[in-house]
Length: 242
Ligand code: GLP
Image (cartoon, rainbow, N blue to C red; front, top):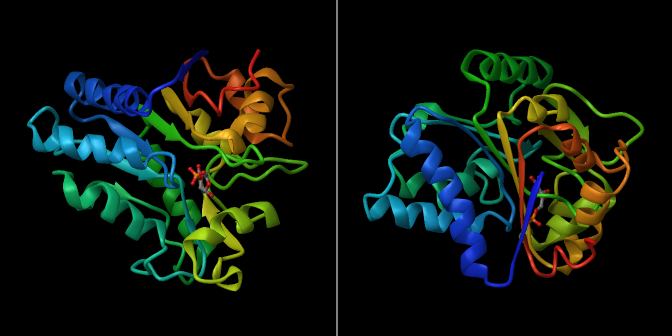
């Protein structure tokens, strides 16, 4: 496990972007696992900038996203499908046919989850999985629980997550209570995992994830079992690490 703490936002962003760019330079067909949330925004903007400057191409790569809210149409302004288009896909040369995100407005969600797992099997493994972390230690939408899931499933969101994500909606009532997420088992199949976190509100989750016991009560702690994890933190998110 390599944990890097950055004092400068620009260094955090550039290091994250460089990991993705160098992978694509050595393997243009790389399969990327990408995340939503505010944490990767700077990295996505930097990737778009590096693409514009001719430093990287996504033309032959594929992207699998971690999760999607249930109950929002794909083109809803707060859907993760819209997020990825607005913040990355519309600004790079990726083939839209090679961008995958669970279709959480599918009529048969169970079949959709199985189909997503099959797509991952056929196209995977993911070469680099970018992950944020919830302040409760969730990854994707795998919330703390007595048990964790392996493959893609519909999950209940915890109150803490609903509250945290309310900032993107006009009212708390509008925040979906369910999501489709890749399971911890699928996430762990990635060849490399890059977890990023910023801000003091993530400090305890980071401490629990990487210096606490491996427990389903902190899903990110399972990353301690993975052989190739890079953790990029700002000074605040890393402030409780010893
Ligand atoms: C969301 C997403 C996660 C993300 C996390 C942190 O609920 N499902 O994939 O990593 O919460 O979000 P943020 O980066 O905005 O703090």
